[in-house]
Image (tube, rainbow, N blue to C red; front, side, top):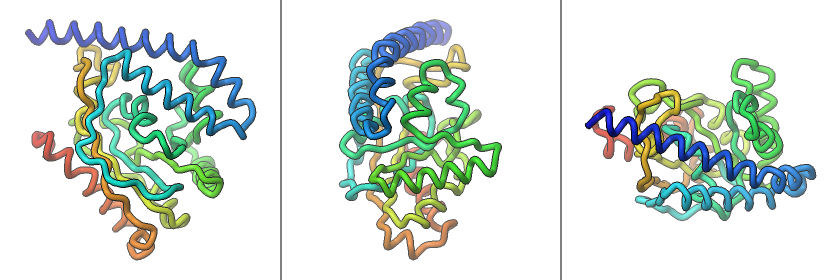
Length: 252
């Protein structure tokens, strides 16, 4: 039975890859042309929202918001755990009204097609170059002042082991929040790893289904100011980790 499930998972991953490549190629000339002028980034954001909904429809992914708290007035920072590539693909349809940019690892710039989207639309973080990493935070600060919200995965990547057990947060997001004094919206993904596991895990789980997401109450700028950076990081970690432990008690 496990072999059958593994084979079906491989077939599903191949289907996901085909859908992603075809839709990326279809939208590439439209989005790339739009992004030639940086002033058109918010128009491009709407195209990414459309892409996310199209991807969900074609790949049979339904989203169930088990908690859907009211969002603050933008701009704000969005911090979430990271358990699957679905977290990225579906995010634009999770929060579609407030335009946001991803602050993500620079390794994405090596991916064909995606590198064009990412470089022009989002903010790469060169984690192994301290100077460039600081420049990324400075760029994020500029974008927030222009009205953009920022989406960050503070773990820095998908856990290699015991997914979805959360890894220790890196501090860039919380340093940014303290400096900018904007609210933080914590988000929990609890089962995306079961719907689409890391492609390198060839026989890992992959199937259509319902993605569980928790959009928690936002942390106000006043509360952020009252906390130390370490306290703020721990508070966000605990909020995000709560639903993960409830749905996945095996990772306690």
